[in-house]
Length: 101
Image (tube, rainbow, N blue to C red; front, side, top):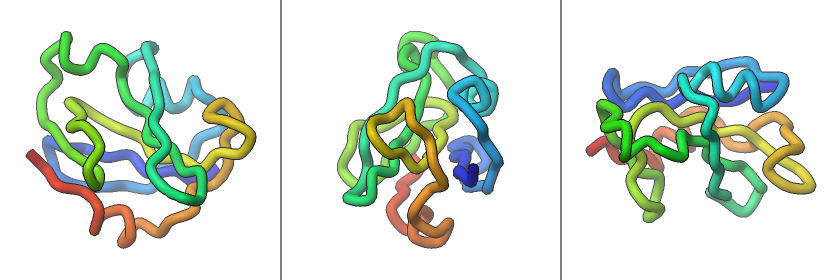
């Protein structure tokens, strides 16, 4: 499935292929994953639950949600955050919503 990985250090978004939450954990670099819905089409932002405790380098914010430290992955969902699907927004649409801190 198509998803986007946000790299706040390089300040870039890249398209990645995921098949399950294990792929998301690998893209983020940690197994402690939480998610937050970030739009009307059930896209979710997945991040390291302990990102601020770990002191991850780089921060970003999507719209008005709380800033995130470290990498994030945006993926589509259906029937909850554990049922992954292709991300619904385009890379350009997502990039327009991101502020790097």
